[in-house]
Length: 111
Length: 114
Image 1 (cartoon, rainbow over the protein chains, first blue to last red):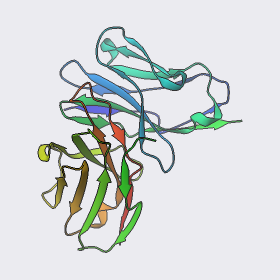
Image 2 (cartoon, rainbow over the protein chains, first blue to last red):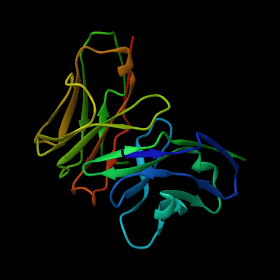
Image 3 (cartoon, rainbow over the protein chains, first blue to last red):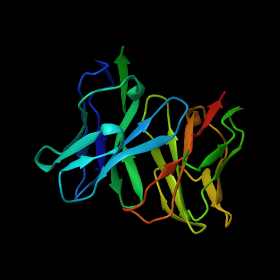
Image 4 (cartoon, one colour):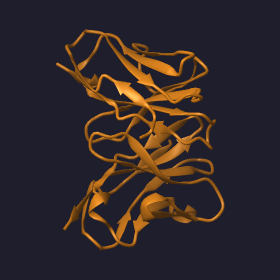
């Protein structure tokens, strides 16, 4: 079955520290993978996506993600977190016409 | 600003009632999808409309139905509301087909069923 797992429900980091959010997927074919961010009271905003090619993809706001087929992972990283990055982050896999989302990771940033 | 507007922002209904949620997409966005996001969960796909026809549906019962109109607006209708229908309902539109589409999400309608 197609699924996305985000093992960390909450993560707290200090401003300026590096960040890695984990995502594991289960999908039978070549996956299309996405990371979205959701701020309180807002809809989802696309950070980056992977379809094929280079396994390291760059996104907006200084985020990047690396696709590792052998580990079925698509982890999101940022070298230096800003207070404005506090939000909920969702990993998703594209399945034909729909997206399957993980349960999200809530990021808290300490000043 | 995504150009996708949902109304109302909040809604309170009682069990058994019917509700209509609305979404207004950007001009030219001929695909609209609806997602349900329960508290503490990721969004779950309800259905997708393309050029006013439903072309994909998730694991939701028939009491969840939708309409898409030529003016790039759409509706999500839920009949016989149940307590578990309490959630944030998100509308997402795009102008290109999967998988090259960029989805534009609205801010959602928070539905509470009492």
